[in-house]
Structures are given as structure tokens and as C-alpha cells.
Length: 68
Image (tube, rainbow, N blue to C red; front, side, top):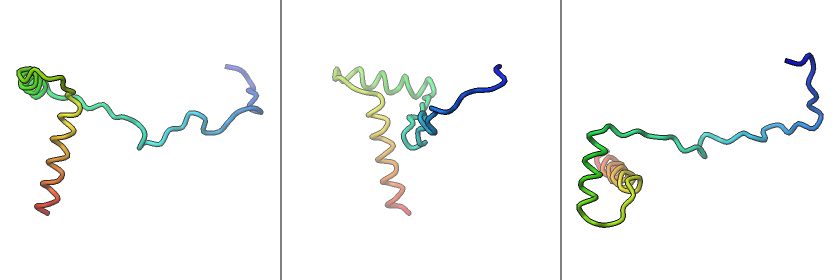
């Protein structure tokens, strides 16, 4: 490590990203993932596991709001 560093041209916050902009990975348990993969592959449609899970979570949120 150097004794001194030159920060005259440094830019504060150059690599900062607010937490709201970060995508947080969510890992499904194997049995949950295999259930959806089997069910969706039978439909012979193009699908996105991400969109299906998000759709189900949004429905659950809506149900929770109605019950509260």
C-alpha cells in the first residue's frame, strides 16, 4: 500500500447505486421450482419463471390488502 494517494480528480459517489435500484436474487426451493417448471412446460407456451412468480406474489399482496 502506498503512503499517499492522489484524489484530486476523484468523483464522490461515482459507483453509488441506491438500494431501490438493485435486483435482489431470490432462490426458490427445489420442490417449488420443479413444480412450476413441470406445470409450465406442459402448457407448451413460452414462459418466464420470473413473470409467473411475480404475478403470483402480486395476487397474494392484493388478497392480503383486501383482508386487512
